[in-house]
Amino acid sequence: MLFLDNKVLNHSVDASGRTRLLRELQEQDLNPLIRSLRTQCFTDLLRGSERIGEMEEVIARWAESNTDEPFVQGDVFPFEDYLLYLVFDDDDSDDAFVSAGIVYETNTLEPFRKLDSFCHLVRSLLMSADQAQNREHIDAFPNWHSGNRTMPQGFRTFIEKQDADSLYTSLRKETMSKRILAASRLEDDKARVFLRTARNAFQEGYAVKLLSGESSSGTLPIEELENVGLVEREVQVSCRKTGHALFRLPNADALAVVTVSDATCSECGSPVADENVEEVIAPTPLATSLLEDGSWLVSRLHFLLRHLGVPEREIAVGPSEGTGSGQMMANISGESFLIATRDGDLTPAFARWVIDLEIETEASHLLIVATGRIHKEAGLLLRNHSRRRVSVGQDFEMIIADDVASAGSELERALERVSQRIIAEHLCILDNSIGISVSKLVLTKFQLLAAAKETQREVEIVQPEPESSNSSTALTWAAAAAYGQSRQVLEIQPGPSTVMPEPELTEASQEESDLTLGSSFIESQ
Ligand SMILES: [Zn+2]
Image (cartoon, rainbow, N blue to C red; front, top):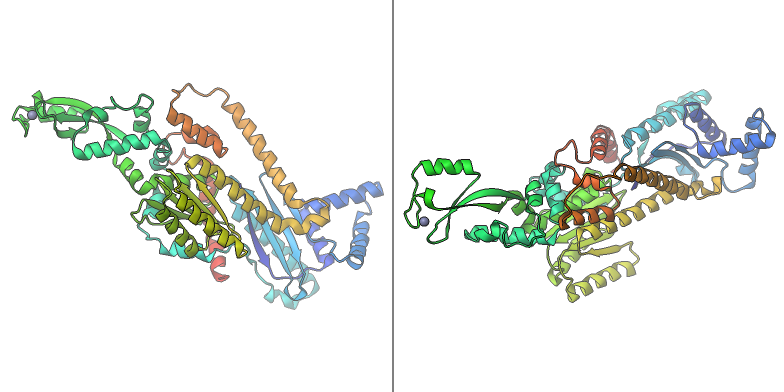
């Protein structure tokens, strides 16, 4: 996914100043794509590079006086996995400005710092140009201010409503930990049913058979659940006569301590050592916490958003209201996404709750994930709401998904559409200068880059290590395939250093430069 960030400088640059700025940037190893193309054209035409300066001047003068458009409208500076751009906007001469931006992908390192240093360079070049002509203006030389770094009001209100101690913080802490991995296993319906039954059985204090896994379907991999910390093996002691569970112990060593102590059964009075001892599978507190209110769904979607490259600060998780529904929001370059989840049917009551929430947050994208059946009335309510939003001319899109894999791919497509639209909006002004759609060029570059990386990854995992094939892994793979990631990412062991190394690095390095951006953001409010 591509992101765009930009800054704006309220300063007017005349025709010769623009050409000079591009030339000076070129001297600093920033290669302006459009200007390079033009000078190459002049060189080919003149059969040499001696007189291209004069050629450029004459053509610029001609263009200024014969066409409506300025000769230099801006330029694009390409780099390996990002590009910088400059756009001169002078539609209204009283409010002329220069806009500088960066288009980058999820894994680009320190994008804000790159943009900041580019802005710094551009401003100092413009200042020294001004200085050379006329000194007294220097004190009043404007500063860059944030461009699209605005937060939709609905998203801001949503964040303000969060309880600092709620799921929001716990999710933050656990983002990189076991919770993510465990939540991915819960995409398997059978695993959820098993864990729910197991939990209930435990609360009742019996059903040893079920807990030992004997009666569960053969396809459910207990080891898988154990590996991700959803279940743990315990030793259960139950009365031989009544069959009731007496107590559970973490392991067989603990049992030795109990038998030595001459404890007796509370039901029949026999020594505990003579009672029934079995190993059972018990759901962990993590399993209980993830299943409660379908919070595994929220965890999972949070992970997906992060995996798609959405920065942590642009995601907010709402408090669970104890109704089995989850809510979260994401802000993508100024467009807000509302995500409502329910581990169960999409009921009319849930649909009404979602509609209320959507009205309150004014989100322009609504994603609903409900793992159960869609009730007809609920579907109707949602469709009518969507129609009302669109009919009053608002940008609105609604997506309903019944599992995480399809929610993930729909979400990716929606984010992709938003990012493409934003890039086109910022760069289309340069289309005429180059004769090709600049945003199309940029998007294609990154698509080709991603395709090349994907091919490389496929070559790397051509011989995966042997692994037991089971439904849960297959589901994870399907989910991974659905949002176009390599399965390596999901198959790694828990631990902050191994989960998504690249995005984490990016995030960490972004934090520092965020400080400056954050302050400029506050000023502009
Ligand atoms: Zn007994």
